[in-house]
Length: 254
Image (cartoon, rainbow, N blue to C red; front, side, top):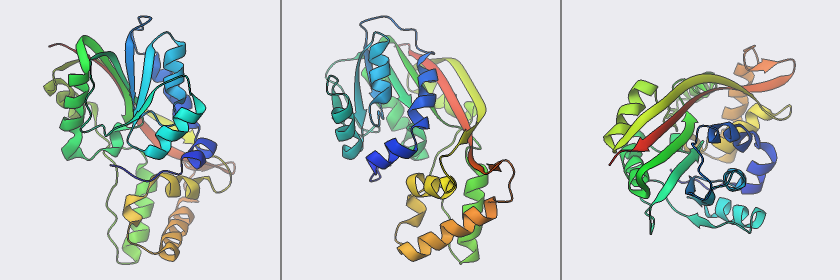
């Protein structure tokens, strides 16, 4: 799951990630003063929003670079480095919140992550999250797969994008009761004329591991050229990512 992040580049060019995440917070039944873990907190923008809404929020991220940036941006809040598939807390919290993190975890490790979430919550505590859902980035990943195949390479999908029907049973097997679940398209505008190439470089890292920089650039350029004819992704000179989001709220029952 862990990758090395260009934390400040992420903050500059991809601020839409926490911006959209603010809407996920609306799904929390907020009770002022309750303890909230922002799991996969990134640069801490949403941790600060959770605190502004009255929660005693703190953040955790697997990336030391992101945690350091969060501390720099929000010195009044606490941020820790921790892996979502193996973390534990000294005492339970009332809310675990997560935005755009779970899809980074391999399918085989999803039960471990959900078990950690359940263990971190008090009975009756809320787990509210959004992640990529089934079909997210489908056109982009298909173009990358074609570019890899044309050069005799295999493209291995680096994300886990579940359906509601596939994920809700995993959540409930961890001891949580799903109360709300949504799967929806959210085309997302990317910044600048090179927005698609920049998006691939920022987020699609694992398939390029072990490849030289020159070959990586060639593959990205080929995929971007392929996508230029897709009017869903390039409209009026602006690039869009074909995002699909899975949003859920669940409550710990025991």
